[in-house]
Length: 321
Ligand SMILES: *[C@@H]1O[C@H](CO)[C@@H](O)[C@H](O)[C@H]1NC(C)=O
Ligand SMILES: *[C@@H]1O[C@H](CO)[C@@H](O)[C@H](O)[C@H]1NC(C)=O
Ligand SMILES: *[C@@H]1O[C@H](CO)[C@@H](O)[C@H](O)[C@H]1NC(C)=O
Ligand SMILES: *[C@@H]1O[C@H](CO)[C@@H](O)[C@H](O)[C@H]1NC(C)=O
Image 1 (tube, rainbow, N blue to C red):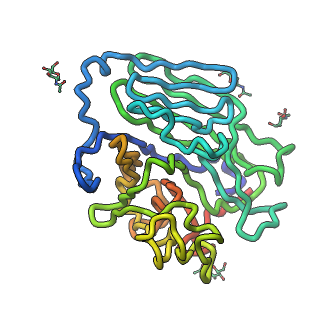
Image 2: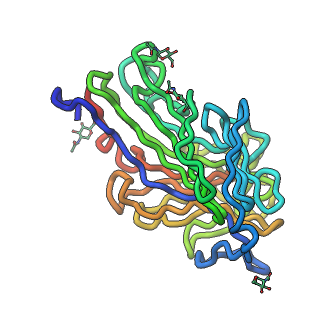
Image 3: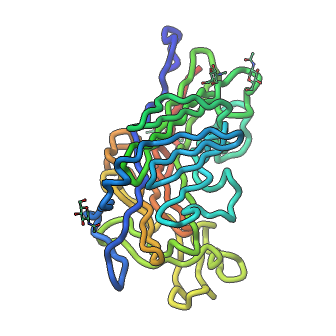
């Protein structure tokens, strides 16, 4: 990439993933086996078409089962309504800190050693498909030299898709880097959802890796003690005493790419789950054995598509001019 002959370089096309919500059917422990899904007796819901409402500062996708609100034109997910819950995302967080895409990049003008974070704030909304079966919307930002060293030198197009009768939605993004644009390293790119912490307490990343989790406050200096690196915190005085003496570290919940199919969180009341479903690992860099973060205390659930974790700078995407 970056050869003078390439007029137009389509940098990356990420595959889709799905965040889905299901009525969990367990009694005592909300353990999961990942075979359940949305089993609504949905003839009435299925007959409801997908609706798109565009407001001044928000866009709402609604199929009668699920209602997803996004900022307009930023394209961040600010609210997800389901099963009587006003918002599955943490409403105490700012609107650009609930459900979002971001990248970490380094290049000319970036002094931060670990690269600069760019939360991919869209500037323009476009409706791609609007039928009763499917609505697809796009949030773009076009790069030009006035943005040099300020934001990642990419055009991006973040897509959100909702289908009729489905208790979830899809998101994917297209990144584009044109000839002659500044060279840079793409260190990390991901999708993040921060869930309502009063509700989502039980985390499942595999059949045999699931448990109740500490609260985010337990990691604060008042309740925890940071160990050799900031991610690892000894829980000295957690809100739930059962976690006392444990070390919380999000890297404990990393998975090999080949095993990241479904992961997420369960709420006991109401009994619902929030799941990220990744249908394929082909779009992730580093091959099937490369590890990535999944879900962790927050409650946070991530899709990491590309990152330097566990390998360092050698697997960074180096984009030429
Ligand atoms: C589900 O739908 C079928 C067909 O409409 C109906 O016979 C059945 O009673 C429904 N079940 C429930 C639990 O609502
Ligand atoms: C913004 O979106 C509108 C509506 O889809 C489209 O007509 C227009 O060309 C877009 N503008 C830019 C700068 O992309
Ligand atoms: C460059 O991008 C900025 C920020 O989006 C925009 O305000 C400006 O109009 C653009 N300039 C050109 C020449 O397109
Ligand atoms: C890996 O990266 C380091 C630091 O950037 C570099 O010195 C080393 O040569 C690289 N190794 C390979 C095999 O490319």
